Image (cartoon, rainbow, N blue to C red; front, side, top):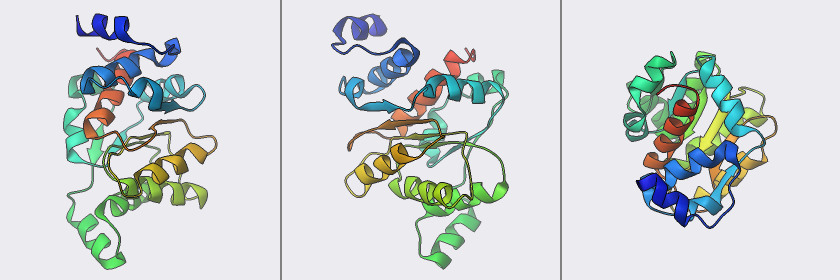
Length: 196
């Protein structure tokens, strides 16, 4: 019934390939502004669904985002999701290098050498570090979902991701977002990939 209400109240024409994602985010937040602010690279949904179907693992910036991702859907798709934020080596690296744990967790993921889907719902510094590593040619993510919430560097960090070439992205422009939004996007993509 909620999705029927969302469909009836949507005032924006949303392309069919991303409509389920937008509707799930609205369902999670009760905020119709996401119909305007969610920004997708060309073929983002199809590209990310292909990566998920190929078993590409997911790295989140928070344990909250990780907790919100449907584990049964991941299991059906043979995909793993991890978060390194609470790892002792990440905390030590952040302290040693004078960075945030979010940035250090991106460094850790990049050193593993796997092609990940990066899901950022809270930490703009994670997006900034991803941008740096991509532009330096050190990693090429399978995709970036960048929807952190907040006031400091949030808008700017998201715009950096939009500038990247050849990497599928989903970004919530502006200040809004959050771990719940990040998880909702991943869940929508997993369901679209057949993980229901």
